[in-house]
Length: 135
Image (cartoon, one colour):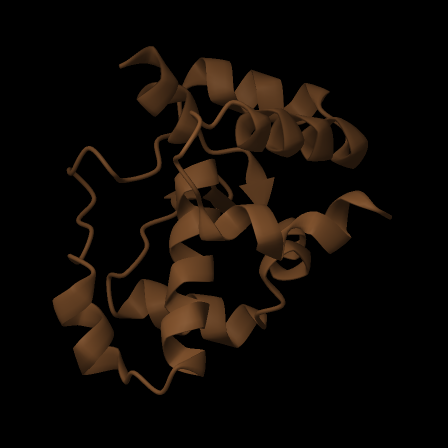
């Protein structure tokens, strides 16, 4: 359960998520509008994304590339509501952590998260993020 809470912590601003996913800000906002992701918001209304949000966006991108439309994606992926366990959360701890982390440290956290996957458990995010680490 602690791992799931950590994966839902709001850490990444939209700029980093755009680099990670190769999606535009407009695309990300569109998927949010359709409740496929629910990023957290700061007091200043800035979107903050979690590890889970990034992974969902990569899954959505993959489905779009395969020709699946938004209606089909909604059937494949359950919409996320603000009060669901999958929703990104902002807590005092995650806000403090986000302020203290540099972009380089966030990259290391992502890499560590990917390496902690159990053997035999694959994730689309692993291949998609490879180029991000080489920067």
